[in-house]
Amino acid sequence: MFKDFLLVGLGSFMGGGARFLIAKWAQTLVAGAFPLGTFLVNILGCLLIGFLSGLPLQAGWLSPSSRLVLATGFCGGFTTFSTFMNENMTLLKDANYMLLFGYLLGSLAVGFVGVVIGCQLAGWMKA
Image (cartoon, rainbow, N blue to C red; front, top):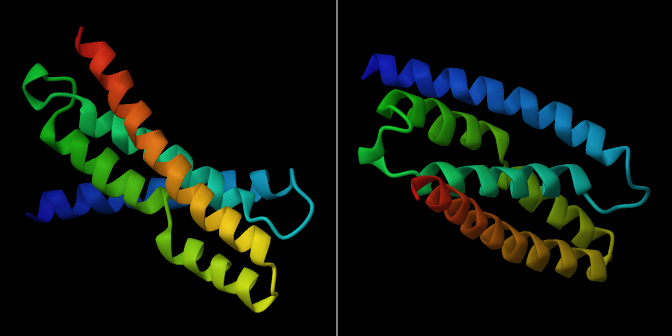
């Protein structure tokens, strides 16, 4: 149990660091209030966790420890629901309703599509 705790912690550390770097970089690409950095890391995280969860356990692509590090740890640290919700609240406070609804609905829709595509990519590796 303690080993698993450390593996998840290691993955979370790496995912959080990667989120910080990618989100800061992505935010330099847009002017305005749209939180592109968080949007991008959350979509990439959906794609990655879809891929990881789509890999069959019995095929031996990833060990259980690797799954803990990557899916639970890295993806959990990389994506951020609380920041996503806080950014939506900021858009609401600023009465930026078009961006608010675009960000909310776009994140949900594109995130779900990312998970589906990730699972499909993993499925193609099985073939």
